[in-house]
Length: 191
Image (tube, rainbow, N blue to C red; front, side, top):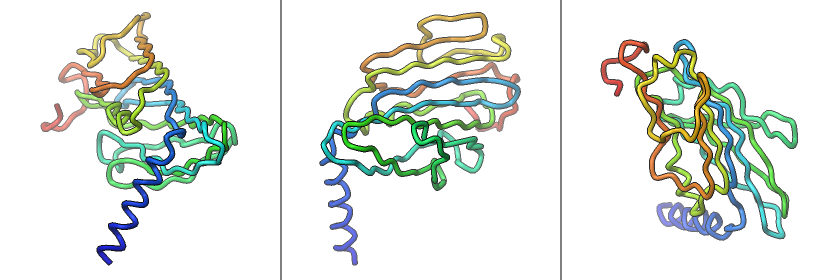
């Protein structure tokens, strides 16, 4: 049984590596800090440059236990339908099918409790072995006085909105929004 599992794992890894034409191409994310929630609403674009349809399992991680995250939707934009997914302890998993020489976009929206250190995971981009061709981020905050800093300095700012624009983006750290102590409901071990 152990050898069967190892063999299946090797075949699985080979299948993923054998599909270099399947690519995570772009992401456009709107973040919001309002009340006691940190919300994420993103459009994620995938492309298939091969001559065959590709079916790929996608794992979308959360920075905190998945049972504290409220998933509002995982939606296939081209097919105008909710996607089937399963949750585990640290994220969600869903399957994508992309026709030959096609591009699709998925909308994922969720929110999580607001804490002092609010994280959006970017470092998993490295698992695709290619940078994102384009990434756009916007953060709207209900009260800028709550803000204590970012892991990435914004490229531009508005009144209560901050913007980031990236090309050929292969992040080595996550996107973090720090809030001032006392302006969030948080556990003592939160940092």
